[in-house]
Structures are given as structure tokens and as C-alpha cells.
Amino acid sequence: MKQLIFKILLFIAMVSTWQSCTISYKFNGAALDYNVYKTISVSEFPIRAALVYPPLQQTFENELLDYITRNTRLRTVDSGSDLELSGEITGYNLTPQAVNEDAYASKTRLTISVRVKYTDNKAEGKDIDQTFSAYRDFDSSEMLTDVQDELCQQISKELVDLIFNATLGNW
Image 1 (cartoon, rainbow, N blue to C red):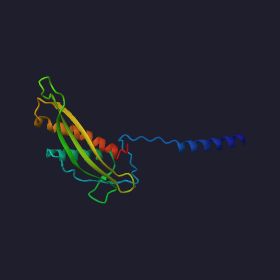
Image 2 (image 1 turned 180 degrees about the vertical axis):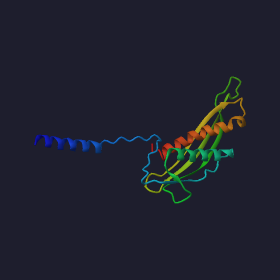
Image 3 (image 1 turned 45 degrees about the vertical axis):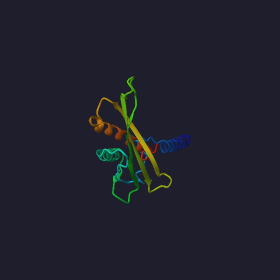
Image 4 (image 1 turned 90 degrees about the vertical axis):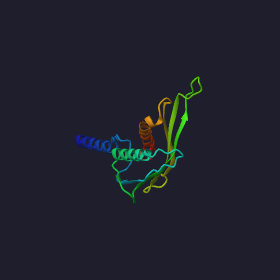
């Protein structure tokens, strides 16, 4: 009789431990319940900055869509989605940073700002309307036209990471 009670108690302990201890790893950083969220729509991000570099829009949009595709299981749709990302590129600025003894800048900073509207159509209170900025410095002896593409690519990657963490990553 004692053996039967011991086996029953052991079984109950194992079942309760099994149910309460589940280990879950998310390597992509997304904090989404894929039973609830299945689709996302990503609108164009037009450039509304005073200074305009036309390839930036396509570079940023491609980076954003690629990142979402690689790091979530969401299906991209044009309308009627569970989640929506829209916005605009609001800043593309050059500012001098380090000044030499001859009063000329030795470094120039390229800063890009993006305003993002994130709408969660499944849950209230999770919407975001926020501006994200990132920058890279480059040597003032270099022409902007020579480094612009690479800088825009690097800054776009950082911006996408910031946006993903604030929206889909739910950090």
C-alpha cells in the first residue's frame, strides 16, 4: 500500500513539475504570440526631410522588410493586417563634429531620423508613435557622395533594430 501511495505521489509531483516548468527560447527577439498575430502591413516611408537622398527610402524599407521576414513568422500583407507599421523619414542632417586647430571640422556626422507609427489591431494600448534616430561620423576629408550609400545602409540597419525592439520585439 505504501508503495502505491509513493508511486501516486511521485507521479503527481512529476506531472505538476512538468506542467509548471517549461523552457522557452526565442532566438529572434520577437515577443509575439503567433496564435494571435499572423499578418503585418508595412507602408512606404516617404522622405519628409529638408535634405533628401532619394535612395534612402528604398534602402530603409528593404532593410525593415528583410528584418521582419528573417526574425518573425508574420506574413506581409497590404491591408487588413493584425499589425501595421507606417511612418516617414523626417531627418537627414549633416553636422560638423570635431574641429581642428585651424577651425575646420575634421569629422562630420550624418544623422537620420524616422518617425514610426505602430498599430496593434488585436490589442489596445500597444500602439506606438515615436521618432528614432541614428548616426554615423565620417572624416570630413571624404566627400559625402563617396560614403553616403554605406553610411545610409549602416544607419538603416541600426534604425531597423531600434524600431523592431520597440515594436515587435516588445522590449
